[in-house]
Amino acid sequence: MRAFLYQFDFALRSLLRRKVKNFSILLLFSLIVFLFSAVDFLMGSLYQQAMTALQFQPEIIIQNLKAGRQLPVPLAWAEKIRTITGVRKVVPRVWGYYFDRYTGANYTIVGLDREMVKGLGVPRELLPLREREVLVGEGIMEGRQLQVGKRLQLERPDEVPVDFTVKGTFRSRVSLWTYDVVAMTEEAARYLFDLADDEAWDLAVYVPNPVEVAKVGEKILRRIPGARLIAKDQLIRTYGTSYGFRSGLMIAVSISCLLAFFILAYDRAAGLSREEQMEIAVLKALGWETRDVIRTTMLQSLILSLTGFLIGLIAAYIHVFILGAPALRIAFTGWSALYPTHPLPPVVDLTKVMSLMFLTVIPYVAVGIVPVWRSAIIDPEVVFRG
Amino acid sequence: MNVVELQRVEKVYNPGQPNEFRALKGISLEISPETITVIAGPSGSGKTTLLSIIGLMSRPTAGRVKVLGRETTLLSERFRTLFRRRHIGFLFQEFHLIPDLTAMENLKIALYPEGPSPSWLESRCLELLEKFEIEDKARMRASLLSGGEKQRLALARALMADPEILLVDEPTAHLDSKLSHEVVEIFRQLRSEGKTVLIASHDPLIVEGDLADRVLHLKDGELVDEVRRR
Image (cartoon, rainbow over all chains, first blue to last red):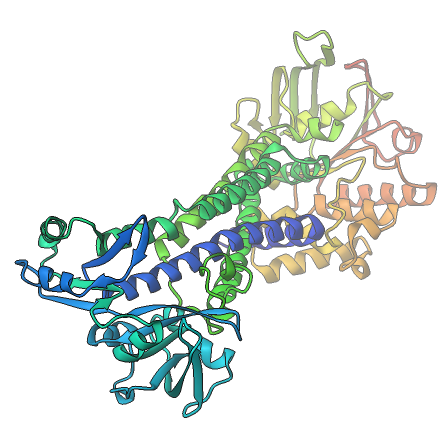
């Protein structure tokens, strides 16, 4: 054990003796791990947020399309669907996007119904809303420099201004989704969007038994042939693809990281410098066994790669979950001009972290063994002779 | 009992290749304990190769090598290494210190694989640094030491495990006359302490002086002459 500790100490000192070279490797290693982990952490967190938001989504959403464009849904459709066996509830939803010329941002205007209240996590004490009262997401509060009790003026499509009073703000578990939301009564939203009383923007169809969803979908299409159905499962799969490993950015980052890592590992495997070979020969001449030399070299690689891995991982965690991923967020958070300034909720997949460690640290340690072994089995005298 | 016994030892470098070279041709000799034996001869005569084979750093192509009564030719690489670590000290012509390590660290690494207690290891290093009067250089990097200091540090490192045999290659090659005489005195002292010293040299101070108990002359890989002084 003591011999091992001496060798560990020697390995550590050897790393410090070649500061510039080893610091460069450490930096590159950390950067590779940082880049990969940061993207993965961010995607994981966004995916988690998306999944949380989807919990409150209906099993089926019905839209009205004409020439590929979305149109309001006639409320008569709701009556046709309500009578289908397996359907618990059909909720007409009034919501839409609003471009605010003052902040240059897109707001999401939501006419609150009971399901929306649950989904957005609106605090109970702020309900019910009166006709011209609104709840405003944090982003809009900051962007428009609003305060509770102040006036928020929006415009109808015919440019008629509509004044609202800010009743409160809210920050839900899915803050990324509520940051740009203005929640109001359904009637107010209908007035703001100039939506007819017998129309909604889409219909939320709740089907308690997941096995019946497909069957209900078929029946809806039979009753309303032109309707567009979006199933919750479909949304989950879409998010999985967008935020998962298959997404283009993740693949690009992974390939870049892999390439950089291979270059690093190749340099390690390519061979030893004359100075390193001489040092091994000296140690062998002094009575170090081949396995002592290999163990010391492995310890050096392990210290270097593990330190690099931990630095990269911790830096990625800080960057994403404490600083709010300033360098990456813009690429992932969609088209809205308002992004939450507070950090994303930490979501760390330990299996992925361990896999990344085994795919970087272990290969880096392993590739260094062969050149050291090759040097260590040469008679020291041959090395000294050059 | 002889400390070293060689029987018809041969060493061929690059056998079967166009650049094949026979460095040793059937060397047989015995070395008695607590003696100083000088192996003399011009450059390329096989002195360093002979030391390497006796020191188990190189295997002979043919012949048998016995060290401290143990037949070493067929020992595994691992046992040869262990045997070398515990019984044989080397002083190389180029010193082969690790330049970035301090003098103290250069000594310590010789015994790292043995895993001695840190306090014992520290005191052993200090003892040898004092013995060779370089204790004030303990924390200095080896690359910053003078030639004479490097020589003494390399000698101290060779003696860390208190070996029975000390093999020395051209010890005065990089020293001036004064330092050379100091080194000669050190070898005398080591012999009086019970060490067996083998020195490969062509320096007249070593070969012709009164240091050696015995001088073996090598030429083109063969023992051509032997002078016994005691």
